[in-house]
Image 1 (cartoon, rainbow, N blue to C red):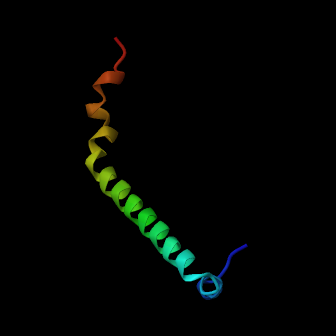
Image 2: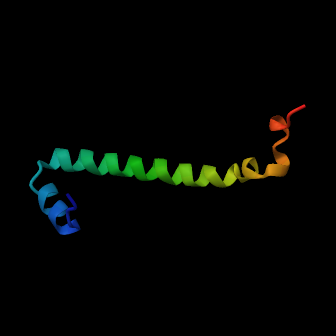
Image 3: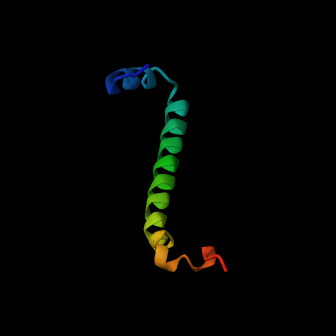
Length: 59
């Protein structure tokens, strides 16, 4: 079931203010986590380099 942004907003606006504030906090935490994960990906790009894969060389 796909809901439009307007439908989601309508449902949210029916919540008590405390619930809305908690939802905002939860969304912000999720955004921050995803941003950090995206940033961390750039720090480990060398792990995808086959030339740097010295530990998987069979001897």
